[in-house]
Amino acid sequence: MKAKTKRLLTLSSLMIIFVIGCIIVFYNLRGNLVFFYSPTELLEKKNINSQKIRLGGMVKKESVIKEMIVENNSKIQKITFVVTDFQNEIEVNYKGILPDLFKEEQGVVVEGIFKNNSFDAISVLAKHDENYMPPELNDIKLEKVKN
Image 1 (cartoon, helix red, strand yellow):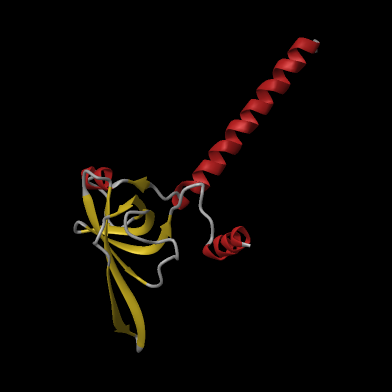
Image 2 (cartoon, helix red, strand yellow):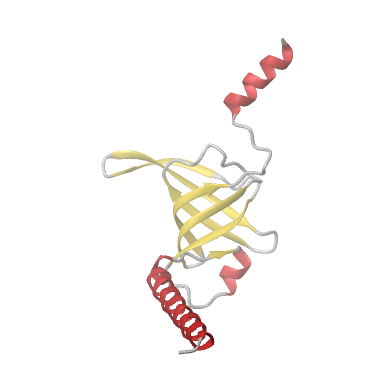
């Protein structure tokens, strides 16, 4: 065989192996993908029923309602709040402990199930900007400045 033919066969074989590998990886990941929607996109979607998705937006000011409930003989905090993208809003229900960064007028990503124009969250992730400083470190920094 000529060198040109060997290179062509080698390159073709590697490309076929690469494509097959990509197909296998993407096929196996299809069930683990969780899509991220804004409230407007989520309300426009018609066929989202009982699949796990992520909803992102801002927590609406004065929309957070916390209450203690008893479930399975233990006290659990139930939180209801509204996530908005400043065009549409969706009410979110969550049972559990919120992250420390969670507050009104702050970015949030909630993962859960959307049904009946309400979102039942399984987990809540609070977002922050790149200038975030943990309160413990911020206090230490302020003490050093004062001295």
